[in-house]
Image 1: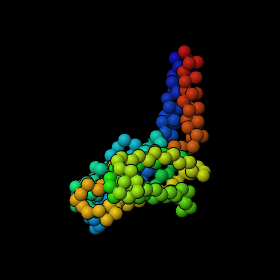
Image 2: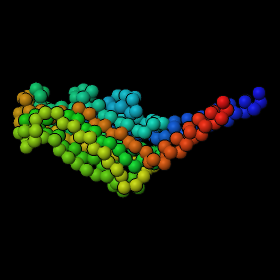
Image 3: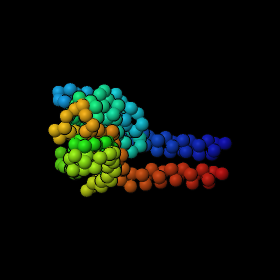
Length: 224
């Protein structure tokens, strides 16, 4: 009986240690999530961190699974949309957040929206490390047919591998919406539906956790 009790205690402690490691995986601190139309009309944009929605920044939370941050740019009041029957001809969306914890070296950047006519959405994203060094910087544009592009929905799904693994990262992104001189209200449209980033840890972090879980399974089989 004493032997079985000891085995159960060891298993319980092991589970607790692994659970603790998972629970303290990453600190996510969202400081900016701000939209505007026809400057100076500004409004807060809600966002989602690992399945939990926050109405406005700041939000400082700890997550045990790889960080996933989604800015819900159509859930704000008003939505981040210009044209499309609204009186707005210009718009912006700006976001900033930091990550700290286990090593991260890759993320998927997802942007979806809609452009029509002379509507256009331009974006820029920058990631820096703990000392301010830029580890990723990129920009892009989506335009309707009247601005040299294609009318309709657009989707950016970009996988980015950073040059190294980082325990602290700072992220900023900026979006500019324009109708390129088209009047509003009208049919010309630029709409930002959502902005998402799904982060991936270095493989070693998950190998350690996997090894711990594997040892628990082996131990339980031996007990049987």
